[in-house]
View (cartoon, rainbow, N blue to C red):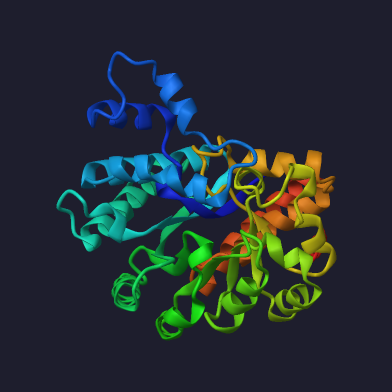
Length: 348
């Protein structure tokens, strides 16, 4: 089934072979060592805490400190996602994390945009076949207001030339929406989409703050919202989209098992939702696998999965014309897979 991956972190989604090669190149993994053992040791496991999972990024971020590495990983991520049926990709990165070896934050962002452009150009099958991708710039929890202002300015400067949105990500124990309110408002008024990691941990009030203070169009994870009827009502009323990353949520301990994931609750309560990968390498997943999990473990019907596919197009941060064209493509593909053709077969 064709769909969009709207929540995927570049520093958590390297190819295995590329990660192993870069690790040897940087001396993180000795050339004589068993690469598979190194990679296995980095993977997320069920029941880890969010803080423990975030700690794994220290290794991968350390390997992504050059234009060459960033371009390569972005290019490969787009092409690998395309082969998995992804037709639009929104790649998250915090440019400030990639400045340890002399790159400026803007150079890091431009390298990822260049890699995305190269991957988009080379992956699609030819004229008339859709493939699009862009960057969502992430502000990290615990950042200063000046750092947020700098990243917001950078995202706005590249709006329309590779950047689609602004994100708040990182350790939710540091969540402080008011600190960043005016900068996220600037981003939104400047035409950027707003997505916020919130409710990945245990506090549904973070979801409320993300919507009401930061103006979130989408919520990353949002698991905790399912435990609070008022927050569910807010999400449904505001038409805010929850980006559900099933495998990741099991790994961070946000849910105890796949079968406990609240995606069915969101759908039942009228909350818009999509499926996403979060970290393809760390969680050893793909978007098609997330759809498979939703069908097999959460008992979502083929029609409900098709609805999620179409919703992923509607929820993208593409310009309105491109968003409508992409949604039409996904709708037609879903109709074909379901063996239907009448307009309106899928819920709107």
